[in-house]
Length: 532
View 1: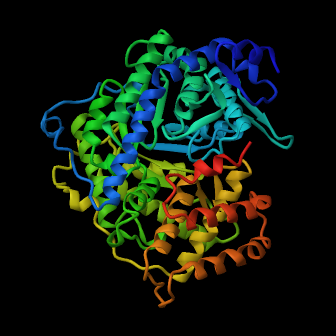
View 2 (view 1 turned 90 degrees about the vertical axis):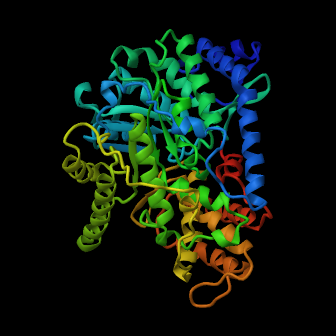
View 3 (view 1 turned 120 degrees about the vertical axis):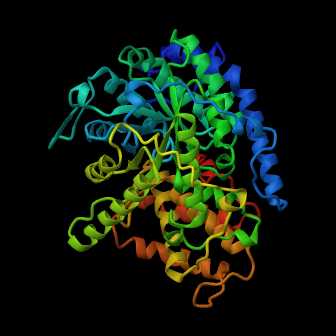
């Protein structure tokens, strides 16, 4: 055990895993800082998670989400969030991805206005991945990050031409099992944000570049208020001015769509915008209505942003943000360039073009891409629609969204190919995740955990709703599911793929979760038990 670990165990902190060089990050002062966060906020985090369970129980009993009666006056009142910092006024293109050194350099150099460094859905949270990512970000902030493959050297451009850095920690529902405080694992949210802030907040504040964060998976204004308390505490502990730390909130759960005004208000001194986290939002729709047979979605390929319930959600987000002086950010373009097939590549890029034009025309202030090659496409479209740095002038007063609009079930079907694809994509992604890769190219899409969540949640719901059929009349049952699973290993063995050695483990986990009587809240909870 290192000197750091020996020195901290006596103070109630235990680090249960080690990699070379981690003591540079996990200093005694930093561990004491994280322990303080845990002791101050863990009870409140647990209370918020318990509130999620109670709310889901009402949905399972047949209730539908609705706008809150107790906050009607807040929604009706005229108020705005605090003015945005100069470095967050122009966010027309944001690139997102994991936190390995090569990705960090490429993203910061990509020409996008913002790079969201993702410790959540596109990072498999092995201890090595997390600490390697934290060190890469620390070196990037310091301007010293470099990465050599032997064949190629990666270096950062001058600071003035780099993207603005934002960091997405893991959600409230996750823990970091390798850091125990008083015998209990620390919240993964507090670990990721606290570790980054401790090492980088002062340096970023001195440059007027943050620190800035994306907050994932929120379901209520109370969860947003908890984040506000955490951030205020961190600012005080690190001698930062109040409100220095700015955040953008991903509206990627169905309950949160009914509380967008409330979430902005809870974070009003530090919130910079809301983001349409479309893939996790679809997953949340499935999970929220897991017991509602009349809310079963068709296969994922048919659930596009033009579907009425998704269109309503996006337009309500734009209207809400612009009324309150915040940015409305569009969603992810998951396409990646297709080499060796000119026609297929052109079709993929056209889909990106159409998606980004729809967002810009609707009033979004920016959008997400997953690959540097898509940055110019998105930028050109948003340059057309943004004569200045954002579109707050587009108030969308034509939008009138009621509760029914946000929960309207789209019409569609489930094909055999769609069913098979759900099984394959979930297994392939989960295998890669178990092998330490959280951002995986599958069928020329850059997939993250949200993709696997949609696939496995749909499979569970389709199999637990008696009487569902494929569009050719085949019953959707466990016999069909098992036939697809049995055929997967031989089919996948014919193609090189990330996580090939974990295919059997991924199949076993998907099979187990799909047979459970209750839908598991998050795939990454049981999967996390199988890594490190």
